Length: 185
Image (cartoon, rainbow, N blue to C red; front, side, top):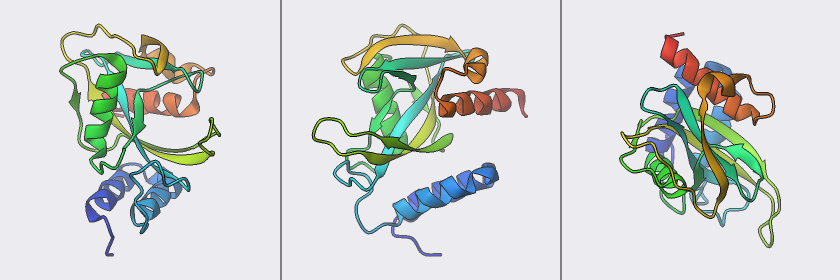
């Protein structure tokens, strides 16, 4: 099959091979990547790509979460692609900006895909985020510094994240995926 953005579509096809139970989500991401309108700019209010980081500690036991100021929820660092189709680089950039951590390393293949609704905020109408999540590894120094986008940051045990019913379902899903990856299951 021929795609407008074959390198992006290939990432999603590869993801589908690893996570066949997520086929409906993957097909929505492939369709967005193949859309004639630029899916990497936030002005595309029908929906656009975002990139975020499953930011793990050096030992792989903890993930760094931020208490998002606008959404008032604990989430992974991330944000808009702002026209850049290199979503892995975007995930690393957002993690650096939102946590102050240096020396981060990003895995080049998507770890998780999540399509979620963003409600109206000010003059920005509600719209869909097609969030492509990447594993980002912390460097030797895990001391973080938040920015204006967060109320707080915290390292949390992945084991506890997987079971915390108060957290966003997609965070619990990523925690379960990470635990399965670490145990080879």
